[in-house]
Amino acid sequence: MDGRRAFERAGNYLEKFAEEGLMAIRIVYFEKSVADSILTAAMSVYPRETILLLQGKKSGDEIRLNSILIPPLATYGRGFSVYLGTMLPWDLTIMGAAHSHPSGNSHPSTLDLNHFRGRIMVIAAYPYNDYTNLAVYDREGSTIPHEIVPDEIPQQL
Image (cartoon, rainbow, N blue to C red):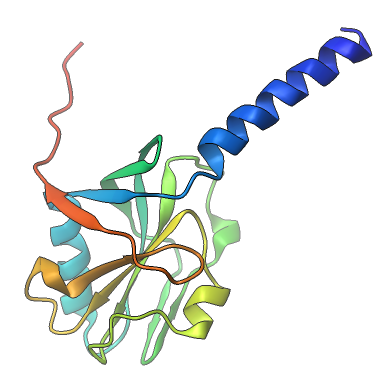
C-alpha cells in the first residue's frame, strides 16, 4: 500500500471515529436484568461500595447495556471500590463501570471522575430499592438520561 492510500484510509478512520466515537451519549438503555443486578450487587455488600463493569453496545448516540462483569480481584471498601484494570482483556463491549454510594448521594465525587473508565459511569445510591436509585454520568460529570427496557432475547441460529 502506498503512502497516499494509507493516509486516505487513516483519514476515513479518523472521520468515522470523530462521528461515532466522540459523539455525546444522548440516552442509556438498561436491560432490566442489568439494572436489577447493579442494585442487588450494591445491596449485597452494603455498607461497602461495589463495582461492576457494564457491557453493551453503542449505536450512534445511544448505549444499550445488556450484561455486567464482576471484575477480578475487586476490593469493596467503606467509601471506595477498586479493581485492577490490567487483569482484564481488551474488550470494546465494556461501556463503563457501575459502583455504589452507600451514603445515598448519587452524584460523582472528584475521585470518581478522576478514575472514570469507558463512556459512562453508573452510580447506585442507597437504599438501592428501585430504579430511581440509579444515575448515569459522562466523563465531565453531566447526567445522561436513562431508561429501563425489557431484556433482549438472543436469536437462535
